[in-house]
Length: 290
Image 1 (spheres, rainbow, N blue to C red):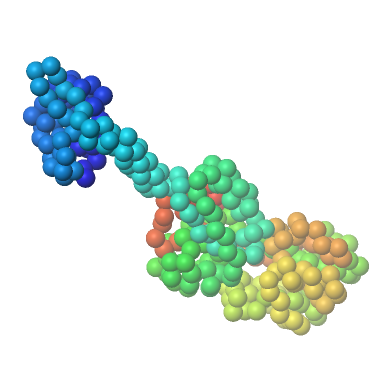
Image 2 (image 1 turned 90 degrees about the horizontal axis):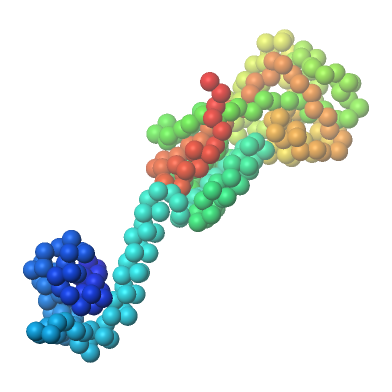
């Protein structure tokens, strides 16, 4: 059943005048009459009776009218839903992110997105960067906030503001009283670090900073995620680098100090096939400083 023909029926039923209905519908009267005849043939019953005194609904027309209104209303709702989904105003956003990303401005961006687009359902998943890339390839998530460089160069990426690294020290450590520390100060210190396979580029950058200062890092324990590393520092297991965002989460027994030569942790938004809600979310994310 053609939705436009149902709309034509309703207009004729309202005006009880084919000429006036055709004018309001921006159709010729013969075209309108043809649509009504086709509709009647599809239904298998006459909907109007026309004679010299005018037009009136048949019993079938009266019975059809409320259902016709419902059909048109539902059709309009369906069309509106499709338009809103295409614009990213409703639907679903499947967002993946790393634990480090969760300590950036990402939570505020998610809240702002939910406020701006309340009809978009947001699904959140926290895993490491390699797993996020795999999830993007499999179509399990729409957008990922992770740490470049990407292992899958076919994915699309937009850089986000990087996160500075700070040094986590146990309270009472010999360097805790300093406001800034150099890598040469860390000679022979027991170092806690994430495994290299989790973030090889950052791992190698930190090691390179030690060696540039003439110091060989003494890694005594691997720890992941970075929040676990901070807990081990509090327990006196060693010292370690965490992001500035993680450092803002107060942990008893730990102090954080700046190491000016320390590298930053890169962040990026990555996607495979951009969905409308993902595109909307990218508009809310902070831009990388130029």
